[in-house]
Length: 312
Ligand SMILES: NC(=O)c1ccc[n+]([C@@H]2O[C@H](COP(=O)([O-])OP(=O)(O)OC[C@H]3O[C@@H](n4cnc5c(N)ncnc54)[C@H](O)[C@@H]3O)[C@@H](O)[C@H]2O)c1
Image 1 (cartoon, rainbow, N blue to C red):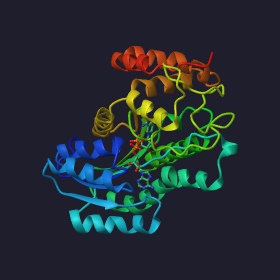
Image 2: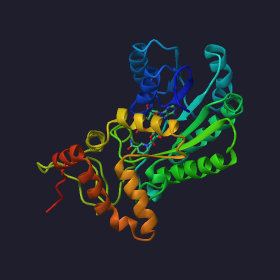
Image 3: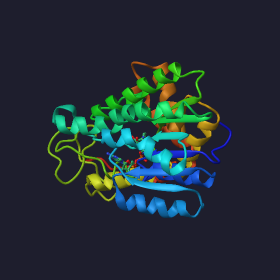
């Protein structure tokens, strides 16, 4: 695909982060955009930002878990915009909680948004995408769909599932009109951790005022104050790659028809270390992250500002 001009793109989770910047950059390149999310005010803000580019757009308050709505969506978009060319399954959530502390309802909530919705969107949209030349289905997994970390089981399970589904589908669809892409972002500076659902117990012990590190110790900032869950989310956001840059990398990957699109040097290095050290990549993580930081000086500077001070 050489250009997004005159394409019609649907982006889920477009009220924030990468979804918002995918919509803006697609509009900048002359595509009609259909944005959807559960966050009404964020959606309005994205809508406002898109208006500057004078392209066709629609905004839908839609929960990606709503199977019936998703089944009816292709017809609605085709009625409004004439066709559908690109579907970005981008909406996602995270629950950084130990497996035994998570109830079934939360487990299903995360899987339904991160994975099951992608199956429903793919089933609804693929028959329409396949009819047109130069179309694409883009599913967002994560570098956490390739490597694993503790206290994140449901996120990993959902993102590994997205990867398995999408990479198999890509093989199945070879030679068709539709490109299939799986996106593997590393650390991107978005609201995903600010809006995370935390369990009562993150690693060990109660965590009413703040979060605990991997040793079960309270995470403290440089002044020795305990870091709250919200604060940790803000730090995560401030230290990550600019989501606008991430969106541009994703769009470039689609133009180059890359089946696997890695976003960020950290994602690339972690993928390589997983292949070279399949049993020990977890121990290599600090070195991998350090290399990643050394290769992007502005993030190194931010990391120094955000140094976490451990308990004496
Ligand atoms: N930020 C990162 O470091 C990172 C890393 C790897 C993968 N990802 C993935 O990238 C994707 C985009 O996330 P982001 O980082 O931009 O986060 P974000 O929180 O900024 O954006 C996610 C959007 O999804 C929306 N959403 C959540 N539940 C929804 C639902 N039921 N229906 C419709 N919309 C819903 C949210 O309201 C939000 O606007 C996600 O799939 C995420 O898992 C993010």
